[in-house]
Length: 309
Ligand code: AMP
Image (cartoon, rainbow, N blue to C red; front, top):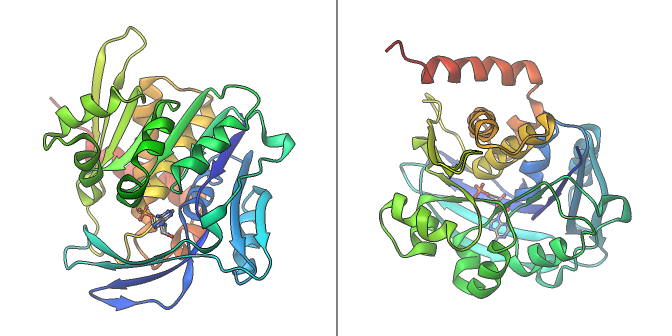
């Protein structure tokens, strides 16, 4: 099962109440690639960076099993840059700076050997680029998952609605679900958003876990909830959503399934990975964990979610 990932590969600067970083590697597709390759090895990346990027990180992606032949390097141009500042609760944040740079006119060229992927993860970037990528595939994938954010809802809502109509699963956070649907109740929001196209919706609620809305094979409506692991310290939540999405689709690609039961397990995998991501700044922690670490945390999740009734 091949898995194609697109999304931002970037520099971030992060301020938390407990400290700040200078420019460090970030970007949705960076987190997604690290997460997926822990579970599945046939992963291809389509993205763009400037020649100012940290190419040691590209080597890390390669060594972890990502095929970077779809990563474009724009000479004389700057990589995408995002600066975010977390509030005291570490659950909400403000975007201070978004410099699109190379993302501004990104033309996603999908290498020929990646034009028929089984699974596609459209990570956070312009909905127009997400749509172009889908249009460049020569076979319909088994599953297309999309992640986006309020930035694109504010400036490219029509393009976002066009791509939503072409995907199977949408992952967004609770605030974004409310913005997209105009509904406060997340149950009502899920109904409105699923009517826009995706049959399955995942609403991420940060430290309060994630909700999965979908349908079982017999057509019955289903809802599933996965908590987040209560952690003593959350150092930096940046990338937790992308890591979650990467763990989710990485698990599905590794078992070759797209049914609701498999998605339930997949959001537990996504949550387990995200629980590691937040323990250090940026991609550091995610880049260092092993399959053994992941299985230890999955066991903690099983414990957290089981009852004797
Ligand atoms: P998350 O914390 O999972 O929402 O993702 C954070 C990552 O998203 C950061 O590493 C940023 O580089 C990236 N990011 C922030 N804004 C955008 C944007 N408008 N488009 C694409 N990626 C973005």
